[in-house]
Length: 240
Length: 240
Picture 1 (tube, rainbow over the protein chains, first blue to last red):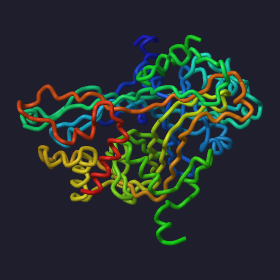
Picture 2: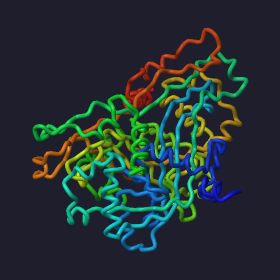
Picture 3: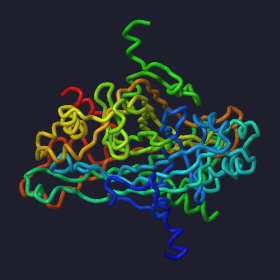
Picture 4: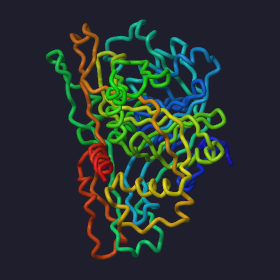
């Protein structure tokens, strides 16, 4: 294995090893990133006083570091300077799979689970960069057009960062997987595709006269796929 | 407080109290159920050997009990007869909110976090009922049309159940929330709606000649919203 192929995949550990339907799993870095980058919403799992929480939140990726807004875990993290184990998961539902047996009913999906140690972003420069990035990663170059961040806003914002130590992608993207002998049964089977799409932009009704639409909105055409828009946004963000 | 209003809301505890943006929160049972019932995909948080996991999975609700497929946690639960604390979360992304400051950028969403003790379903009758329900809850009356469940399939299936002890809903559903003085700035602001929709049904290419589409597919019209279809499916499931 060359150095290049080593960096192309995350290490396989007891926590990220795909146990069920392992033929759907991958530890490939690019496969994991493609699933993450097509999403804005993730779920982060933490443990606070023995209780697990799955918290939905907006997130973004910069290299192998994931960032998200603090909320429930920030109070805990303020006391845990060494950080705390976390798991950040993204899942896209792509289709409903109706088979000839209940057992083979399924769904098409793309999911990525990322493991690491969550830490509070406390460095002032890293925090300001993150507060700009949370805008620019989704809406290219938008932060430069906005009213500047105030010190009070920086103080009121909690941002959490996690380097991905290991991760796994899991994908099902195919038709009905019935048992061979069941295909002969007179039962309807098929797939209902599911996509998440963008609607017609609703301009704020208090917009100052003469303000035009920013170019960034061309990333989000009405009827377009959200995942495609977000992937393209990440590409621009990485090149900036 | 009368008995009736007591059952209309979940108790508020340290783990489900909405801390950030608490004006968006609700402990109303119907509000929580409406968010759960509009979804097929959830994320369950568990702790295994101190490591938190956010596992995406299909789930459904029967009264105040949530059911989902086992996978990663089933091995742990087989050894924990008393069950283990878990958190099952659903989140719908409904819109991207572009404000005049970075701080007021946001998203419209509906989320529900449910807390309780996850247990393995081991009773044979409860398990067979659950294996039928996972089909019928999404595709009304479909299980009766399918090839019956085999004993091997029942053995290979792990189902987890959790009574909701407490829960919270959190919803943002509005336009741009800029600071009052920022509305006068010459900066574009608005909302990009996001919906998850159904595509054209892809019939299995190995369908036996003469097999028509089942009536259940009328719940899933091309271009229709997935959340609306799932809500209607839950209504039918509860009446059956």
